[in-house]
Amino acid sequence: MTFHIGARPGEIAETVLLPGDPYRARWAAQKYLENPVLVNEVRGMLGYTGTWNGQRVTIHGTGMGMPSLSIYANELIRDYGARTLIRIGSAGALQPQVKLRDVVLAMSASTAGSPSRTIFRELNFAPTADFGLLSRAHAAASGRATTHVGMIYSSDTFYDERQDLSDELQRHGCLAVEMEAAELYTLAARHGARALAVLTVSDHILTGEALPAEDRERSFGAMVEMALAAALG
Image (cartoon, rainbow, N blue to C red; front, side, top):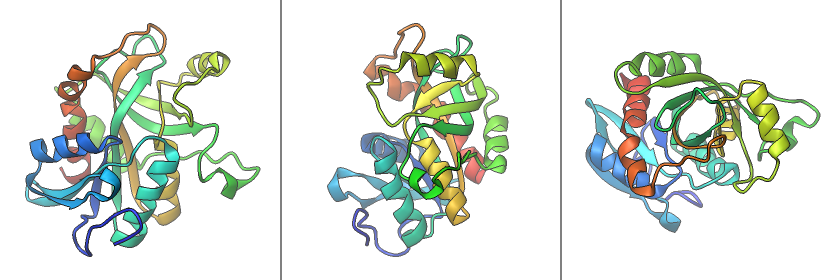
């Protein structure tokens, strides 16, 4: 057990899928895993371990934002031996060709600030995905969802009023914005683990379009399937 995860030794798999929403972790575990077992519910952050195609996998919530993700990713890697961590979450599109329900595979994740930023001081560290996971997720996309590969932006604020920053990100080809991947990629690099963010577009920054809450869960299946195929397929 750790401060934030109540699982016993051996109850967390080496492969962990990381949705932000703990209820999405429960939904994904019940839908995609065989014999899912609840291994954590400390502070309502649900984690389940089961099997997919005979291979053990854990699906564990992280909460919203890089500080929250940093807590869970650190403990999963350092205390439970997680070696492959894939974020499955939502994102807001920043490019006109990226549509609602499309999937974005984050090759790299820029950020203005994260819990790891103070470590690098003046260095502008550029965290990236694991190429093996990225390439397998892209291969698994065929027939599942329209998929885009490229840079994303991990914001440390949800209600961001920096329109000038959004404009520059769009001008430089950034595909989408979310709130966790840059810290996940940095922690994976630090600890020699593998990481990837597979993101479903739930809203569009340019047009103001957004999926209704009841549609989001139904639209996220392709993302979960791609993540499982990338890690274990």
